[in-house]
Length: 92
Length: 379
Figure 1 (cartoon, rainbow over the protein chains, first blue to last red):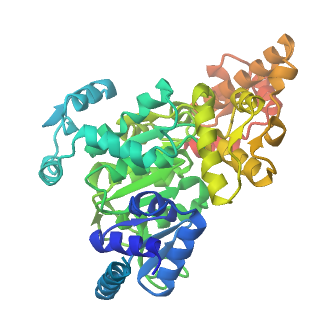
Figure 2 (figure 1 turned 180 degrees about the vertical axis):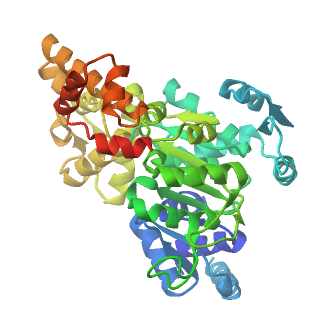
């Protein structure tokens, strides 16, 4: 899992009611440790998470998309986050 | 401390918030005003100093670059605005950072872990706006096979940001006003009244008072939204911020595109400062991106900066030309306003303007004024 994907899932795990467009996610959800990526990288990470069904996307009529967690997959998200943290600790 | 104010004046409100009041309510108190505010207060008691610091850290790359007093005076309000639940109306030309400020208000507030839902009211076809905001029931209209939640419900407990609020159709403005007053609404095709706890932050890039005068924005909605105004100055009114902003974008995009571009030549800086930037910070960013991408050297020269030359510097408008232009603008604006006030009735408008009907009609034709459109707006 890429750090940015981890950041997004970690944020949603702690804030399951959060929802925003990619601009807000890039600016406010990513941890201070993550080097601020460009919008294309953020968009890629969000698309991957939507394709995996871990987050939901809503397309607004003004051509903007909002993202929020898929509450049915919270358990899986929690497991993925734990796995990432453990593998990160192993690599240190 | 929660303050109950009688006057609702923005200056008085700010003064209380500066004196460490945590929130405010305009009198008269209504049932349901106090308890949610006390609850929020108990859950979150942010300190202003920490908030300002957090805001500067988060926004520094986009807005707090530079030291223009005009801009910092407005930015300084954001931690205060974040503390309370009141509606905010952000004014400013396109590209001045209205959405960035709206997000800052949300993410520094007790609603930070709830949804932030932005909507550009000017980017949606008129007939779809109401559905987008309030949602619909199954079968509400042809093609409505399933019910759909509107953005107001999506933003429940969070913040709804309505950009270009003056582009909202007048009927939707009425429904929005009711929602702001009662916290209740009905989705299309439903008889059930729904409730939602949403903070509304609105924005406009036109003069809101002018929008009220021309009938684009309802006066009662304007007063309801404009509890606390935030007015972002255009870039040309804070020219001292242009060099640091440009250097910030230069560093950002040099890294992103892996280019070895390190600075601007003095002539390039002068050109950047002298340009009026009608597109403001967003336009400056695009110009710098273009210069970085096309640059083959480490220093960006004035020839690499693609901005339109200032016409006023090369060819100043003649006195007669300026006078004619200003008179034409006045005539058109005056005739439109009088027609709106008289619901599009040309005879009544002519009498109000103390002109003959024929002379008034000539002005309508001269300025290509669409009377039918004004009648619709006035109704």
